[in-house]
Length: 112
Image (cartoon, rainbow, N blue to C red; front, side, top):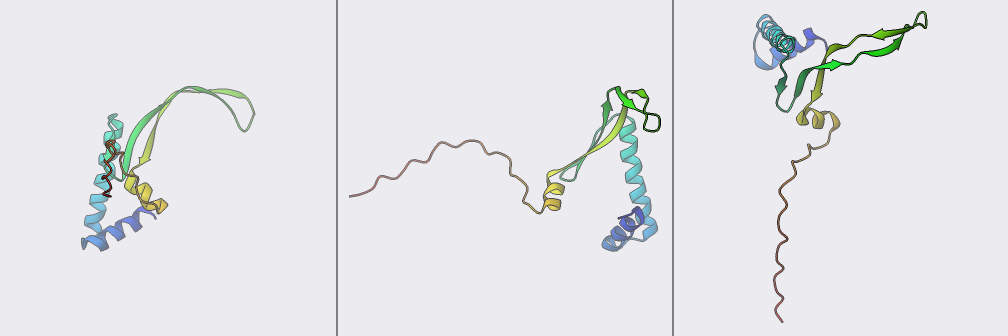
C-alpha cells in the first residue's frame, strides 16, 4: 500500500476529504519524524514502537573493489511491532500476560 492509497482508505473510512486526510497523515508522519530526530521514542499502544537505535562502527567490504573499509557508527530508525499488530498479521491470538500464580485449589472431600 502506498501513501496515497493509505490516505484514500482513511478518507473513505472516516468520511473526510482526501485533502483533509492527507494533511492529517502528513502531520502524523512529521510528528513521528520530529520525535525521532529529538531522540524520543514513539509508542502507539498495540500497534508498535518507533525508536532510534545506535549502530556501532564496524568493518566492511567495498563491493565494487573488494577493499576493506571501516563503516562509521551511526543512528537508524527502527520499528518494533506491538502485540495487536503481530497477532493480526500472524492470525494467532495475542498471548495473555502471565497471571500471578494461584495456590492450588483444595479438593473437595468425597462423601462415602
